[in-house]
Image 1 (cartoon, rainbow, N blue to C red):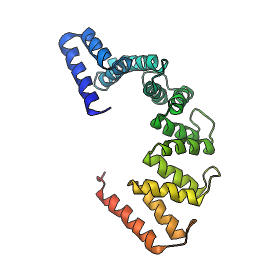
Image 2 (cartoon, one colour; image 1 turned 90 degrees about the vertical axis):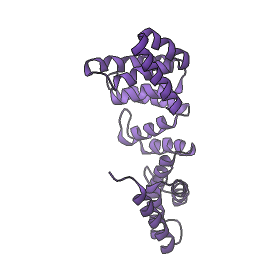
Image 3 (cartoon, rainbow, N blue to C red; image 1 turned 180 degrees about the horizontal axis):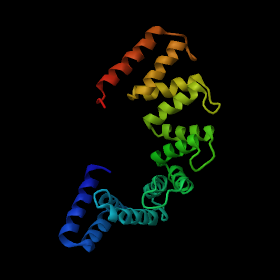
Image 4 (tube, rainbow, N blue to C red; image 1 turned 45 degrees about the vertical axis):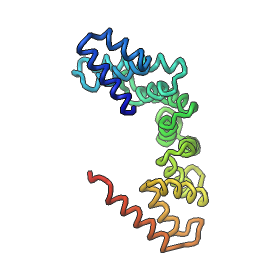
Length: 221
């Protein structure tokens, strides 16, 4: 959610404390609709005593499910995520995949990535490397940098029988140009080992140095 969205939810929480549950419901429904009510319950669950948390999580999923069944793509993703994590519902990988697939088919990029992960791990579906790469490719085509890196890596190592050095270079370069650390290291390997390109120690070192520079700029854990 963006800053404005968070402010709306914060205002709803304030209204709840001042004027009661009915007032927050009116406020959030007016400004956010069913998705907003679901978010409100979720945010309350994150700050409420444990004995009340379960009910708020259940309510959040119910509101999201209502919206998802009426075509709200973000709600489809949220319901899938709830089933994946077991938050507000019993954990159910197959139900998670059902909702995430629907969201991914409608263009939700985070859902596409979770579908790829499901096919990588076999969580809720049969393991299928080709399907994993296909979902990542959809996300990469939507300009998701991490997906670009993972697609490039899959083509580089031949995950799922997809070895293609020219595509590995293409996707790794796109991700690296957007500042992805792993993709920079892939670019180093490609030129160091001459994967689909002439070996070039100079270019390999340039990418190595860029990766190290980025690594040093990242917050230390």
